[in-house]
Image 1: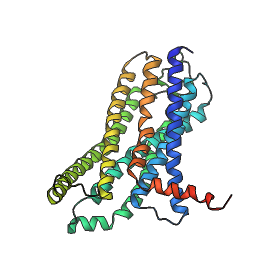
Image 2 (image 1 turned 90 degrees about the vertical axis):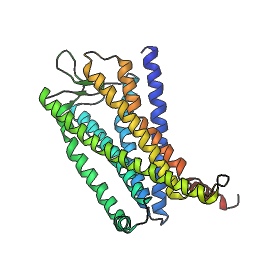
Image 3 (image 1 turned 180 degrees about the horizontal axis):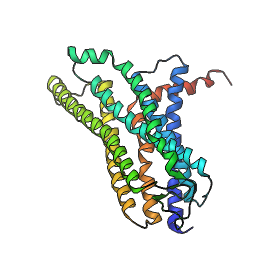
Image 4 (image 1 turned 45 degrees about the vertical axis):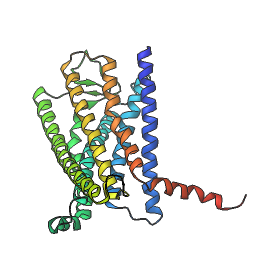
Length: 309
C-alpha cells in the first residue's frame, strides 16, 4: 500500500467510526423514548427511518469500502456481493425518499392555519406512516435488478465491467438495458429531489415571513424564544441543502467515472468518501437541533448514581 491508499484508509476508518457511532446514538435515543412510554412524534418517526437508512448505508457500503481501502479484498462471493449491494441501494433509495418526506412534512406543519391546511394536517400522521411503508416496498422492488448485475470480484480483462468496486463488480447485461435502467433510476431520484427542493423553498418563504412578523412585533433589539416548528424547519432546510449539494456532486462524479475508460484509485476513493458524507453528517444536524437530547441523556445517566456508594 502506498501513502495515498493509507491516507484514504484512515479517512474511511474515521468516517465510518464517527458515522456509525452518531447514528447508533440516535437509534438508541428513539428506542429509549419508546421504552420509557414516550410516543414517537411523526417527525421522530421520520428521523428514525432516516437514521436507520443511514446506518444501513454505512454498514453495507462504508465497511466494505474501508476494508477494501486497507487491502482486504475478495471477501465476498457472488451471493454475498448481490445481497450487500442490493441492501446498499435500497438504503440509499430510502435515504432520498425519507429526506423528501421530512421536508414535505415540515413544510405542511409550519404552513398557515387555514381551513385547507388544517384538513391536510389532520391526516398527516397517517399519511406519513403509509408513505414510509410504501417507500420500503418500492425500493425493495426497484433495486432488485442489482441481484442480476452484481457479482463477486472479476478480472477486468476477462469481462466487460461497468464499475470495479474492488470487493464486488457491476457487469451490465447490455448497453441498452444499462442506459434504460440508468435513465429510469435517475428520473426516480430527480422526482424526490424536485419535491424536496420545492418543499424547502416553501419553508424558506414561510420562515422569512415569520421572521419579519416577529421582528415587527418585538422590535429589532428583542429576540423572542424560537418556536420548535421554526427550529425544525431550519434543520430540515439544512438537511436538504446538504443532500442536494452532495447529490449533485455525486451525480457529476459518477458520470465522470463512467465516461473514463480507466479510473484512478484516488478518483474512485474520493467518490466513495463523498457518497457517505450525508449519512455521517445528517445525524449531527438532527442532534444539534433537538433540545431533548441533552436533558434526556443527563437524566438517564443520573439514574445509576441515585444509590449511595
